[in-house]
Amino acid sequence: MKINELLKSFEIFTTNEEKNLLETFNGLAPLSSFPERDQVIIAGLIRKSLISKVMQNGIVMVAKNDN
Image (cartoon, one colour):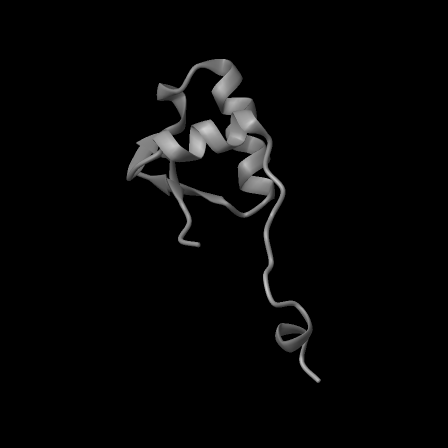
């Protein structure tokens, strides 16, 4: 039996702050363009694999992952 057969739905826990930030997040954006508090929240979302960090021309960019 596969794990996908056992787990019908898999959801990653997110706080209200993380949910609000994810809802407003669109496209590729420089990490430095976010306020310091949002950068901390984004770091948590990167650890949860909900947002990806990408280096582009020496600038750290962040992009929302697909569900």
